[in-house]
Amino acid sequence: MLTKFFKLIFFCFIIQSLSSQDISLPTEAKKGYIYFKDSQGHPSLLTLRGVYQFSSKWEFRQFEIDSLDRSLSYLKKINNLNNETFSQIAITNNTLFVLNGGGYVFKLNENKLSRVDNSVIQKNQLNSSTFYFDNQVHMHGGYGFWSFKNYTTFLDNDTGQWEIIYPKQKFLPVGRWKMISALVEDRLYVLGGRGNFPEKQTKDVVLDTYYFFDLKSKSYVDLGTFNQDLPFTTNIKSNLTIQNKKLFFEPGRTVVYDFKNNAVNTYTNKKLFLGIDVKRPVFEINDTLFYIKKIKDREFLAKTSLKSIYESEPQVLPISSPKKFIGLNLIGFLVILIFCWVAYKLFVFKDFLKGLVLYDETKIYYEDKSSLMNPKQILVIKALESEGQLSSKSLNEIISDKKFVKSHFTALRNEFISEINMLYKNVTSTQSDLIEEAPDPNDKRYKIYKITQQVTEKESFFSFLFRL
Image (tube, rainbow, N blue to C red; front, side, top):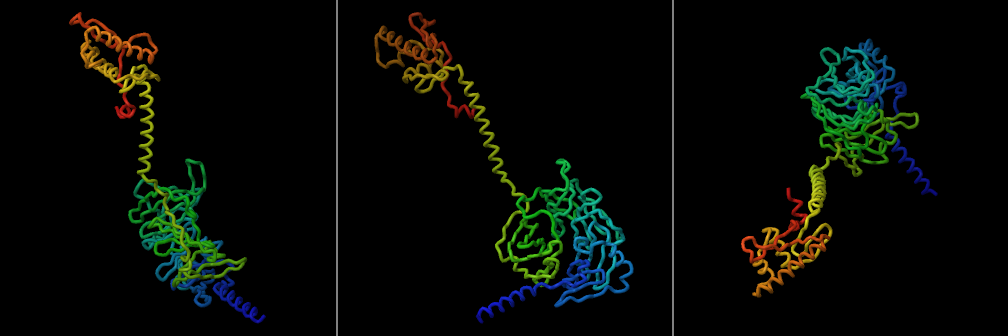
């Protein structure tokens, strides 16, 4: 009984230790806040009164009085203070808060809040890709005023106005919002998102294109379509950039988009990120991931080690659509071409053979009939085909190498020619003779033998196939 009691105490201790990883948010956070990592590397909350910074506990810093005049009044114009309304960008000793859609940009330096823009609320690039490059805030894509945008804007630091970057080539991507994007060196990679397909008459659908915008050359490069097996292709706020890789966090899994190496790694761990608020970012501080967690109606600051997400074997996929091997396409094309050529030649071959009297080494053919012939008969037909006629002397030499009297040779020739004609008639079903006897025009004492019908040596289909 005592042992069970100690086990229960130990179990409760473990549960308490695990739950101690979740830190309750300040009460004021219920009124709205922006979750960010401050310039000192602490998880922090921006509220309308000031900043809550977490080290070992929440500490509050009220805005300085000289920053409360106009900047805070502009901030209060925003209905909802959260990470969907503002994107946060950490720069040296400062944090920028960029209004979704374009317009206001606030800078926080310790507890001093100020405006860095000189514009108005635009709502022209809602859910765009917001990033910081070359000391300037940029926005790519987005939606506003009934259209999806395919251009990039930046905040001019001198004028405080938003300006458009005009690309230097003709290719422009389809306008979109809610895309997955990552700034890798001087390239902004953009994948998926939602937009319109005018040619398909579809609106606000998932786009299947993939490209990057080179911020140095101000040109777009089309990367084709992305792999349809990717985990997701529209953005979520619970993301983090580590070593040029974009990490997205969901309950039970982490998805890493490595645009530079054209790869996506998905790590699954059902125990991680349970209850994570995917509408807020994740921050890495000293190899620890900090994120906002929601349990029923309560919110907590939660943490886990960075290495814990890599404990499982990842599922690896290419970002771009797997390219079909060109050689296979060529082979397929050649197979089709050969098939068509063979079919064509077979048709022509059948037409070519129609109506012809053919022979080979053993038979005589006509249409679909054939008859066996002995080698001497074939030799005579071949000689008649090439010469057109044979003298009685030449025919005698083919029939026999023996010497007979003239009358006996005459009988042998008549029998030999008669047999050939009979075989010919059986095959062709005609009454005409194939070989006829006639007087030799040069010497009436002798006979010659002529062929009455064109006879052709049978050609194999294989040799006919390669005849042009």
